[in-house]
Image 1: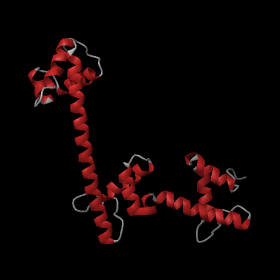
Image 2 (image 1 turned 135 degrees about the vertical axis):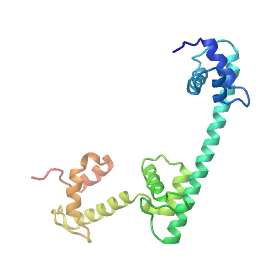
Image 3 (image 1 turned 60 degrees about the horizontal axis):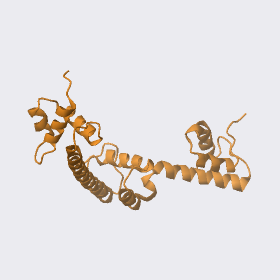
Image 4 (image 1 turned 90 degrees about the vertical axis):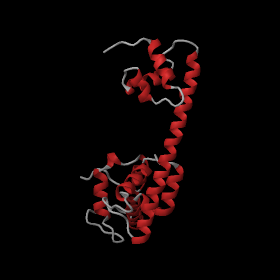
Length: 210
């Protein structure tokens, strides 16, 4: 594999930074791989390829290109998200039901999409405006696992506070099998958040049963 001098790398970067020149074309003209040129451009921006004062000019130009590309990508992603959300809403409003995992509507895999959005919501990786739209449309259904946990916990809490004792394995309260729920909670303690563990311990849950 040939070793390229810093001067050659800088020249390649400067050529690729010219208006109207694509990385692929610049790389082809210099007989190098486009991926290699992309890596050199990154090194150039980071100041790891230093030749002369012209670097600052080229670096600024590259940063401008990078920022412009990032903005365009974010706009495309935002527009695609809005299209998917519109298709999902249309399906729910027209059928009065939630899509299944493989549901496709208007050419969009809305079943997979909404499952992914729920996951992103729980991980807090959605944009604030997107999270707000989903929350307003879905309400508690946005995070059904959280809703189910809170529903079961409230039944468990009501039982403990009204009877003064812990439920047995077969205990049913308010039509909820809180006994089985507590058993499963004990088994999955390591997966619980500190906040949930604290709430359960305030109600006197026994993590180990004799």
